[in-house]
Length: 374
Image (cartoon, rainbow, N blue to C red; front, side, top):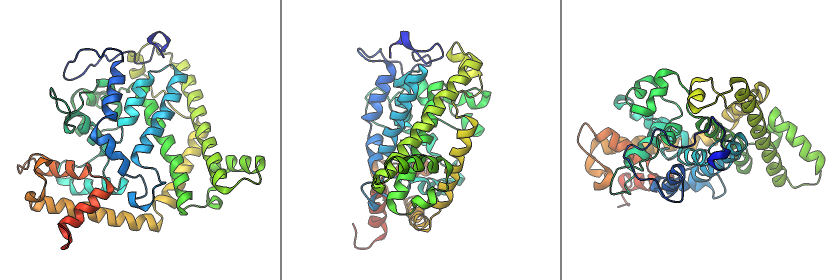
């Protein structure tokens, strides 16, 4: 989509610029450059071996953070095109939003946050921004990826006031009550659409969820009945795929319709007016209710399933023991892991652990604690 085709409230170009000024890239936009830098980053490649609900070694067919990020980008771009938004910016935000996630999904994040409680805590959105601002080491002229302000702003979906005061330009909106761009709002909801629906798919594939259970969840049940009536002899695996894709379509279509209605009501004529308006990207009240019901079901029946809880307990122990081992003896850290000065050590350890893949964390734990490993 060219600049002439973008809506007046879209992000046309980077107004916030880059922290280190660079000449404009020939043949591509600034946000295309951001996307390309993200894709070529080490942190992006590591997402292949970081999983959502299931630990990486549990199966090759479950979603990883990498496949999730690609799905978010696909959904986000589809929505952005319908709304006249900047697709390249939505894609860049979508691909970068999980770069700071720990190994072992939310269990790893929660444990690392507890370990870091005395040192400022740990939050994966802040870590994603830290990855692109500081930790990536690819370019001679700067640390990080030197992304545009709008991309960095979109990565930081939520932030406490205390943290916002330390975040500089990207933290200001949390202090002033302003909104991010519509592109960032779309990427945020695309993330929610993607992970809810692929957790349903992975939950069924793993056997932790059943079609009978999901038949009690209204958003799933209506589409399941349609599929079964249309193709009564269809194999169960295809029934699941057909039902999940229809759920995604319902959520995407509803979000586009509701967001357009919100835009019409608020009538923003610029990015600045989007920032001053209430949140514009949204589901309709009915679909929001159904989606919240699905999220509640997944929280109870999948994320707290005893098999998931057992693996989460193991994962948390790995993170906790690694953290305390490195804090107790910094000499165990690889030389390239960062500053090992006393005041910097907790964040250095958190950066090192957060950058691990599931399998690397397991191997590192064995190297340190198993007598037969070296």
